[in-house]
Amino acid sequence: MIRKTIAAAAVLSAVIGFTANATAADYKVALGNLIDSDVRSWAQSDTVVNAIKEQNKSSAALSQADIDAKDKQWRAETKGGDQKMINAVLANSLSAYLKDVKEKSQGKYTEIFVMDMKGLNVGQSDVTSDYWQGDEAKWQKTYGAGPAGVLIDEVEFDDSSQTYQSQVSVAIVDPATKEPIGAVTVGVNVEMLE
Image 1 (cartoon, rainbow, N blue to C red):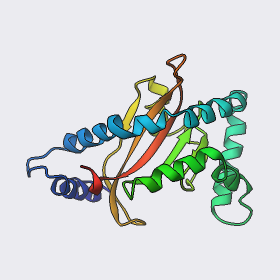
Image 2: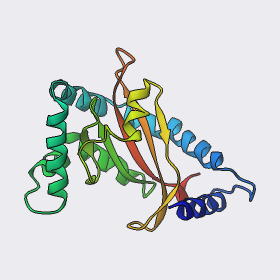
Image 3: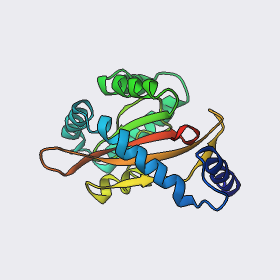
Image 4: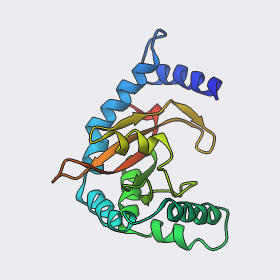
């Protein structure tokens, strides 16, 4: 993993024009700019905010045992057979919106998923390996960090797409209260950064 991350940083430097002395912070600046110039605009849309608020109504009452059971069901469905839970999420209007955002990015975004106040998937462009993200930094360091929460992960080589990617995660904020209501994670093909 370390070799892939180091190699990714070297390729990223070359791809987006950094010098040989470029640091890991350079790609984080480029990804930060992408968050500010694009991600926040569609991630704070009424479609995203309203979907999270709606799911938060039912998620608020879930115990950790309920969350674990839902996550276990999701993981089982990713292995095949009946995919009732996965299909329900992929068929909702938020997932349709996220698929459209991904498609319009013309390869810049490799995946997008939105999480609620408990870290549960609300909508997604592609199937995630699990349903509960609440035990992961992508939710803890965004929703859990407050309205300005942002996480930019290391660049890694993704075998499935054969691209160098980073995941960026951002807290989603209720425009009325200015409080976080959920989060979004976006896989970014760093070779397409400007």
